Structures are given as C-alpha cells and as structure tokens.
Length: 114
Image 1: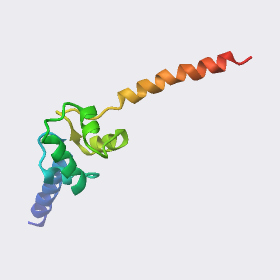
Image 2: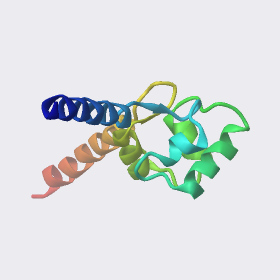
Image 3: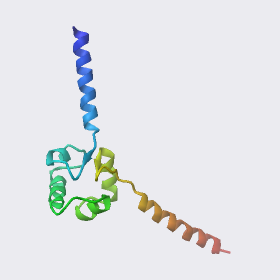
Image 4: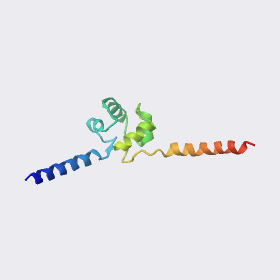
C-alpha cells in the first residue's frame, strides 16, 4: 500500500515538473501563466498584457521593442524559462553577427601594426 502511494506521489511530481517546463506563448498566456514564469512578476506581466492589447507580438524583436524591461539579456532568460513568441524561443543570432563584424576590424588593426 505504501509503495502504491509513493508511486502515485512520484507520478504527480513528474507531472508537475512537466507542466512547469511547458512553453508559455506570450500572445496566448494569461496574466497568471506569465506570473508563473521565473523572471516575470506582476509588473512585467501587466506591461506584456497592455502591449499585447495593441496587437499580437510578431516576434521577439517586436516584444523587446514594445515591452519596457525586456531586452536581449531578459529575453534570453525568459526564453530559457519557457516563454515563446508565436512558438519561437529567443535566439541571440543578431548580436552574434555584430560581434563577427567587429572582429575583422580588430584583426585589420593588428595587421596594420609594423
């Protein structure tokens, strides 16, 4: 009997863990669903809901431009916690491209030295 109870508790714990890792789409989430994400408090969820009233977010850059407090660093953390925009996680591909462009300039300066 005790083994059955422990097994049921273990299954319930796994279900709770699975639900906590489920993706939350910013365009469909309720205020409570947004608040449940680590890094999103009542103030941020309110700003997201208010900005969403203007229209659905097209992508992460749209979200970041319309919601105060959500920039690259916050977007990376929120995405890691399960927040998505139209089912897409945040990827910082654009900043990586800027770094790649900056590196040749440094290399050119190094080559220019006698």
